[in-house]
Amino acid sequence: MLKQLGTLFLAAVLTGCATTRPPLNEPLRPLPAAGQGGTEYRLPRLAPKNGNSDSLAVILSFSGGGTRAAAFAHGVLKELKATPVVWNGAPTTLADEVDVVAGVSGGSVAAAYYAAFGDEIFRNFEPAFLKSDFQGELLARARSPANAYRLSSPWFGRGHLLAERLDETLFRGITYGDLAARGSRPFLLVTATDLTRGTGFEFSQEQFDLLCSRLDGVPLALAVAASSAVPIVMSPITIKNDAGKCAAPGPLAVSPRLADAAAYLDSEQRPFIHLVDGGLADNLAVRGIVDAIAHAAGMARAPETGGLRGIRKLVVVSVNAEQGLDGALDRSDKVPTIAEVVEAISSATLARRSGEARDILAHGAARWPEQLRAAGRAGSRLLDPSVELYVIEVGLRDHPEPKLRRELLAIPTSFSLSNDDVDKLIGAGGRLLRESVEFERLRRDLSVR
Image 1 (spheres, rainbow, N blue to C red):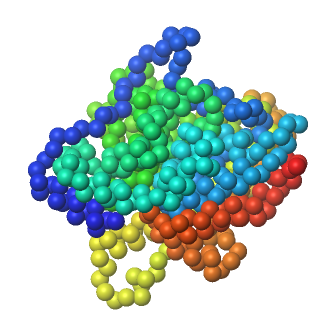
Image 2: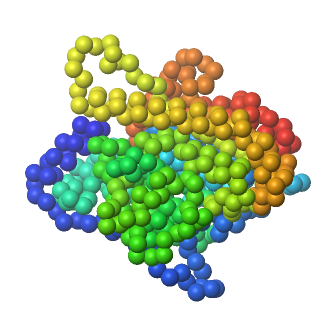
Image 3: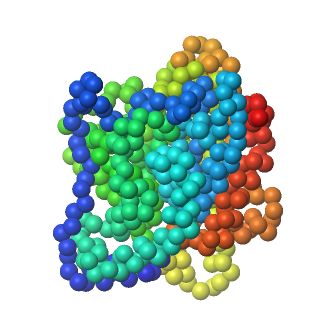
């Protein structure tokens, strides 16, 4: 894919320069008057879905990895939907209790689709995306003369073509404002990487508050494209920074999840922010969740988590579709090609980031339970004094069958896979969740019918 897109891009440049300019995010403007309906997308504004209980908080995080990650996450979602439980005396499923779904790169495709369309994902996601030739269709779009010319514009890149294709295939023009207007969970958290700083950048109103900008007009497809914009293969997505043109948020209004928040407060030095693949900052999409839980454990207030009240059971499901490292380069004395170097650097970086995130999650899981209960006893409005924590890790590397595990880890990171590979990944996601010891503890404690 890298070689093909690079050739097309060079050809576009040689044909002349277009002046196509994608629309940028809007600056902050006064909120609608009371009773006219606000469109700010914040967790405290979202009501529980279909009787979802605040006291059972379920948070999902989907890692990067192209269609491989989306398919693996889909398998986990299907298993959650197939898991009936009784909570507060009422029957429900774990999928119906999801409050927050976070994703990066390929995982953000599944996360955003579930947040936008709910149970429709179980009917349409496979044919519309997982088992379609999404990558081939994207390449065909780039080959068209009209798009080749648009790609010669200094303001329009392959990342924008990806956003357009995602919108047509999956998201149908839905914006964050549309999600806010619906007013129901799960809350969506898509993360990209700030190209010049290498830190995570959230598509959340809190993050956009720092830019004096509104998130509500941003299409979900654009956020997912930014989170999936693998450097060189896809061009960055650019957003405008209007910091300083509104009242700056106070320290208590800034979530601890927002990395290096001060870096966005000087719009004269940084009037534009360029975003690339979220996996380069956190390939498991868990750092923000970890920070929020740690904040809740140590204080009585966590900004986005403040939308929940009296949590008695806090469930975190981390879905890791990390690919195995390819040692083929080390078995040859030939000079690696540019494409091989880019692929190797990308894979090694994502593997390192995933390892760091796994360690952070493991260390946190060991100390959070007592800290959370102590915060509950101290009167936290978020936590019940008897709060119980469940951290469930579902990773391809943990598949119990060696042969199948090797096959799963060898599935490439791309936006088109064979139907057989998709089925294997979906099946693996459901099985690994189902056989998790921590998941079994949760099911037992929730009185599975």
